[in-house]
Image (tube, rainbow, N blue to C red; front, side, top):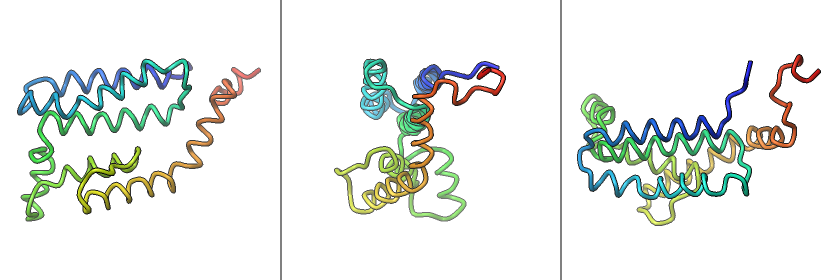
Length: 157
């Protein structure tokens, strides 16, 4: 069985989510604003693919982060439907989807320009990233140096 190329999966997810988010967003101005940095990041990954070899884990996390950005762009962070439901069901004071975005930013690279409560989410995300993904990332990077690491025993023979 052929293994999927993580880069191709990343591009497919980003393209699908981008198209989905562009279909009747709440506000096209917000959509452009919220996705602009995410698209710059995607363009950077595309432009530097041959120079910086990244693991499948990095591409998966980048695709997940782009998906969160696209959800915030389509609905706005304050009006994400699932979190409106949570707000109403749990009698919360507001929609907290922005915290998911800040958690993801912290998980990926931190967000030094936001309020203290959001900084806490970034700290928790970055700490969780280091604690939970370090060994997985090391194995993912090691697999890059051994192209048959993910192959079946039959393919190695």
